[in-house]
Length: 294
Image (cartoon, rainbow, N blue to C red):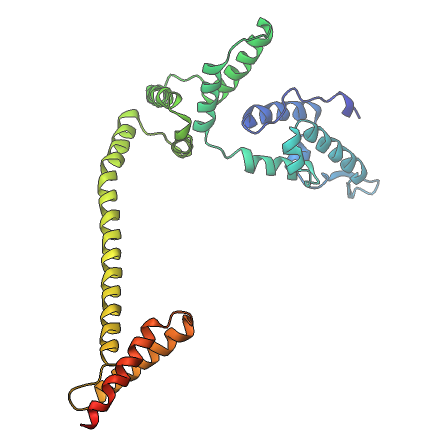
C-alpha cells in the first residue's frame, strides 16, 4: 500500500474548501480510494464455486486498513486548528461529510468576495516573482472554479452587478464587517441601486426611531413622577391625621390615623438615629390631645 506517497498539495484552511475538496477527490479517485468516502462498509464481491453457487466475499481487514490510510491522508491535509476540532471522526467518510457540512455550505458569494479582495490586496513584498505569481495564480484558479466561463448574458450581467457591489464593499471601514457578512449570506446579491436605496431608508428612519425612543422614555418619566406625587400626597394626608381633628372621629379618620402611626413606627425601625420628625409628631399629639375633652 503506497500510503507514504500520497501527499495533498492543498491544506484546508476553511475558506479554500472548494479547492481542497476537488484536489482531494482527484487524488483519491486516481488511487482507487474514493469508495472509502462514499461507503461505510467494505464492498461485497461475488464469485461462483464449483457447484455453481454464488458466494459473497468481503475482505474486511483490507478495507479497514485502507480506510485508516485514507483517514490519515485527509487528516494530514488539514490545518492544525481544523484537525484539532474534528479529530473525533473515526472514518474518512465521517470526516469528509463533517467538513462538507461545516465549510461546504458557505455561500459562493462570500468566497468570491474573499478571493477578489485577496487578489486586490495581494502584494509581492519580499517574495520572489515566481512565488508571488504562484499565489496569484492559485487565487485566480479558485475564482475560475467558482465562476466558470459562460456566454449566458443573464449570468454575465449578474456577475457585473455583483462586481459593482463588491467594489463598494471593498472600500468600507472595518465597522461595516458585520453588514458585509449579512449581505453575502444571501443566495443572491442585491444590485447596487437597491442596496443603496435600502441603506438610505434605514438612515432616514433613524430620527423617527430616536424620536419614538425619546417619547417612550418621556412617558416612563411622567409615569414615575405621577407615582411619586401620589405617594407624597398619601404621606401628606397620613401626616395630617396626626393633628387632632376638629370634628367627629369617623372611620376614615381612624384609618388615616392608624396609617400615620404605622408609618411613624416604620420610620423609627428604618432610621433609629433620625427621630426629629417623629418627635415633632408626638409633641403635636400630646399638645392637642386634651382639646378633644372640651
